[in-house]
Every structure is written in C-alpha cells, then in structure tokens.
Length: 341
Ligand code: PLP
Ligand code: COI
Image (tube, rainbow, N blue to C red):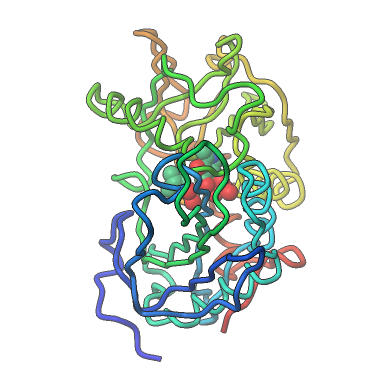
C-alpha cells in the first residue's frame, strides 16, 4: 500500500482529513450494523441533544507502524471499556466493546495510507466519539445517537517536542467531587478552554488542576495525568476519583514495576510536596510522556532538578520503554498490541 505524500516529521497535533470514517446509528433502542464512509460531514437537527445539552463523549488512541512494518494499536480494549463507562455516566447507550475494537481496526485499515512510517515521529491518532443526535428540548437524554470514528495523522501534542514544559497551578477547577472528571465527556474539555487560553496568554504551557474540594491535592492537566519521580527513584502518580483513568499512566506504572523494577505508588499527592520531587511528567495518548521542568504556584516557582533542557533520566527510561513497546522494539505484555495488518 502506497503512503500519502505527507511531511510526516513536521506534523503538529492537528486535524488532517483522511479518506474513511466509521459511522453507526442508534435508533429504536438498537445500534445498526455501521459502515465506512467517505463523507466527513455530520448532519443533525438544530435541536440535537449534543448541541443543546452537550451529550457527547469521546476516546483518543493511536495506531503505530512497528519496526518490522506492522500497523498496531495499543490496548484498544481499555478505550472500549472506558467509553462504555463514559456512556453509562451520561445516560447514553453503550456501543458494544467488541464492536468498538472491530470498528477501530476497520477504520485504521481503511486509512492505512495515512499511518505514519516507523521512525517518522508521527502516529495516526484515532478519535472514536458518540453524541445525542435527535431533538431534545426538555432536559433529558436523547433517544438517538451516532457513534463515529475518524483518524488523523499527528505529530507531538506540545510544540517543541520533548522540551520540558512550564505549568501553572490553576485557579479554575476542572472536575467536582462526584462529578464527571473520571469520564471522557466533551463537557470536561469545554470548561477547560478558558483556563487553557488564559494559561497560554500568561506564557504557560498547561494548567495543573487541584482537587476542587480542598485545593490542596494535585489532580491532572486538561489532557493528561501526572507522574512524579521521587529523589530516590520511586514513580508516584495522583490517586483521585475525579481524574481520567489514563491508559498511558496505567501502562507506565506496569512498565515501571515490571520492566524497570522501580517502586510505584498511586496515592494522594499534595501541592506542598511538589518541591521534593526530582522529576515530573505528563502522560497520555496525545502527550505520550511530556516532561515538566517548572510548576508556578501563584508566583512561587517549583523547579525540578531535571531542569528545562531535557527529560529527567527516569522519565526518559519510562518514555523509551513505553514507546519501545508501542513500536515493537521491546516485547509487549500479552494483549497490549492489537495487530491491524
Ligand atoms: N487526562 C485527560 C483529561 C485526558 O484528556 C487524557 C487523554 O486521553 C488523559 C488524561 C490521558 O489518558 P490516556 O492515557 O488514556 O490517553
Ligand atoms: C488524548 O490524549 O487522546 C486526549 O484525548 C487528550 C486531548 C487533550 C487531545
């Protein structure tokens, strides 16, 4: 299969229209068979549930070309199950998990010409999403839904690739206790837009959100979980009911323990202990692992010993091991890679 003529190494994290997308409709209490289409337009009622009351959820995953030329995705079963959790929380019908994985495979296969080559630094981002499509005017769930998957080739999420980021502690909250922070609902991202625009205007790369109840504990950023490395080499990640259960973070904790023999801890992380960590990183599908060099808490700078020039040594090892697994350079744990072709 011939690849598209794209300057893979210079891609940013943006939308490039690819040839095919998957669409399935939910009507009269059931999902139809679904199909691949070349039509990238969505036509819905002006009163659709998604437009009026933001009934929409999504997932984010990637397809990679491995060293030996296969196309694979990483743990798509976990995206399927998280999307089912998101659907249940927003009173949406679950798209069956096995069909989710099949549809991802089908969509990537149809767009194989857009999967960036091995070593290019780019990947094919996969965006499954679902929304309420029929008219809803009283506040209630829609009766009809559309589930779609599109793909787009992407480069690094943060400009500058692996240059350490500067993050500020946000005065805005992202998620309430017992709210929707633990699911991937569009509404969580809508409410972060003002905070991210403001952060960028003030010269910061991202926001660190705190727990809304006490504002003493670290939660996550707008699009990634945190990892910290202690001065004695332990990997620590915040535990909270209101953060998204990142698949990258769960995988990294396994990699740290089983591949790198590091001690790992998932626990509450307090703002006032940040100064004691040696390294900090953001992890997620889009972010992979992006190093954080500095956190600014209302004028007070917390500078990690790893500095502003390069990833810290433990973060680097975690990055190399995870991407090594995803690109087929290191043996993956059973079931982590789904081979597409
Ligand atoms: N946290 C938020 C708010 C996110 O949007 C994402 C991205 O999906 C993550 C964390 C990372 O999750 P994952 O590693 O499953 O991509
Ligand atoms: C992802 O990492 O897949 C996400 O959905 C994060 C988003 C901010 C791009």
